[in-house]
Amino acid sequence: MAGRMRIRAQKKGDNTEVKVLMQHPMETGLRKDDAGETIPAHFITHVTATVGDRTVMESQWGAAVSQNPFLSFRFQGADKGDKLKVAWKDNKGETAETTTSIR
Image (cartoon, rainbow, N blue to C red; front, top):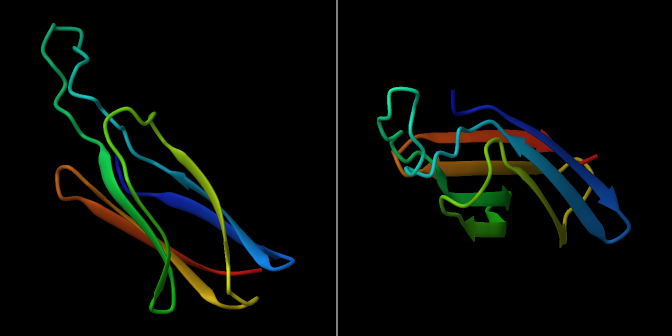
């Protein structure tokens, strides 16, 4: 179920505003299923955003982030048409990335 991302990046003045919706279960490892068995932890641990070879955002996450997390951030120094890549890695080693052009 993990993996898909929807991303939008738009230049507004000197800033580029980025909005990302990530599809991920974000299980804490504390919930139990209907049979009473603990659901194993499965959550995003690292998120990065890059323009070219420059990292514009980097974050470390934990189990306290909700299912299908939404991330919004701004940065300076990009132009319309530049390619923005957002990637994540989770605690099971799964990864996902997506790229968009800045509008």
